[in-house]
Every structure is written in C-alpha cells, then in structure tokens.
Length: 297
Picture 1 (tube, rainbow, N blue to C red):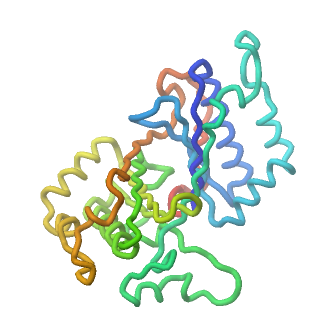
Picture 2: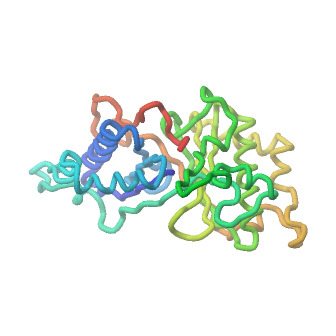
Picture 3: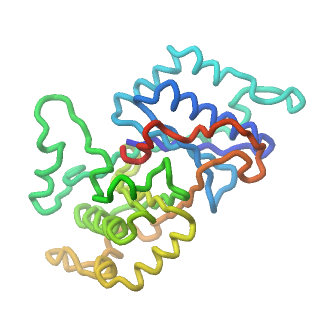
C-alpha cells in the first residue's frame, strides 16, 4: 500500500521545507527500512511548492507502527520538535513551513480482481491471493503482481525519472467494467514499453468510493511522447479504448464508464537538492529505499 502525503509550502520557507521533508524521509528509510520506504516528489507542472511524500508499506499494520513512532520514538519526535527556521526569519518548527489545513493523506491499495465487490470473469477473482487465503490474517497482493515486466526493466517510485499520477472516478453502473478497462490499459503500456514505462493500478481506500489511481512510472519526461505515439500507432492498444463493453447494458466504450471531468493527471518529479532554486545539499539522497522496492508494494 501507499500513503500519499501532500502539503503546501509557504514560499518564504522554500528551502527549509525541503530539508525537513527529506530528513523525515531519510529517517524512516534508515531506521524503519524493514517496514517502509519514503520518497519525496515535487509537482512538475501544476501547483508549485506542493510537496508529495510517497510512503510505501506492506500492510496497514505497518502504518500503525508509523503512528506509534509519534509517541514512542524520541529521535522521530525530535525531528518534529526541532527549530528548522533560522532566527532571522523568526525561528520556529516544521508547522510554520506549511499552510494550515493543507496537510493531506490519501491511502492507495494495489488493485486486485474482485476488490470492493466487483467482477472480472468469474475466474480471475478466484485466482487472487485474497480469495485463496485461509485463516484470519489477510495479506493483500502487491502491485508488482499486476505486471510481468522483469525486475531489471521495472520502473517504480524509487527509480522512475518522472511519475504521472492519474485519477478518475467510476460511474457506479460500470464498477466492474471500468476496472477491467483500467487494468487492460495499464497492461498494454507495460507490454509495449517495458524499460520505458511501468503502470500500476491502485484503489483509494478512504475517500470517494470508486476513485481509481494509475501510477505511471516513466524513465524520463520524453517517455510521455512515446505513450502518445503508442496510442496512435498500435491497433491493439487503440482497440482497448474503442471496443464496446457491457452489451447487456447497451454497450459502452471507456468514455462512458467514468464521471465526466474526473480524469486528472499530475506529473511528479523526484526531489533532488537544488530543485526549483532551493538550497543545494551534498549529503546522500534520502529518496532511496532499501532494495529499491518502491511502488512494488
């Protein structure tokens, strides 16, 4: 699972906020590397000074561990209690760096067949780990299971040059069909652009029902042009978008499965020291998670 945390920076604390964001990520990646990997991103286009943390966890149990850190881990508490702002700017801690009310978390769970009472073909649902598990412990399949790309070609939050976060809200009448389309569209990119792009599908756990999230991990910004070309030249990919589905409901293409105007793309750039004219720092990047597991969770 992924917890996406966002916060809007006050412009006067352009550099201090990034230092706090990176040191927080580095602390978790170092001290709690067995349970979490944290990456810091900036919006490539869109709202400037809106910082994104992508917190990768194997389960919600591990999120509870992070919550307990706020009470039990004194070094972690020190990060939040530290004076990050110089006296000549009035001094203060992390809370002065961000606009009040802008700190937000979105929980993303890797999509699997049958999730949230949807249907695939009657067989795929029964092949999922969740269906086959016995006992009271439930382990959700990682997003890595959505693609057959080999590890050496897989792009994720830890090694992508740019990340597009695409969201869309599904019409309730097409809850199952829209998810099938979403997976097919992702698989088409994974099959045709291995090594250049990896697309993984997530569901929003808490928030609007039936809002889905594609994380499109790309080698570089120029890969986006390859995506555009793929959807023009490749007939099998085009068929995914023009094929009519759900004949028992009158037959529709993907365009009628989603709430109009709900599609939104946000491009994210991995933070590096000096990005967007912030202060430079030579210390090792905080955005490298142990083992490079990134978005495979």
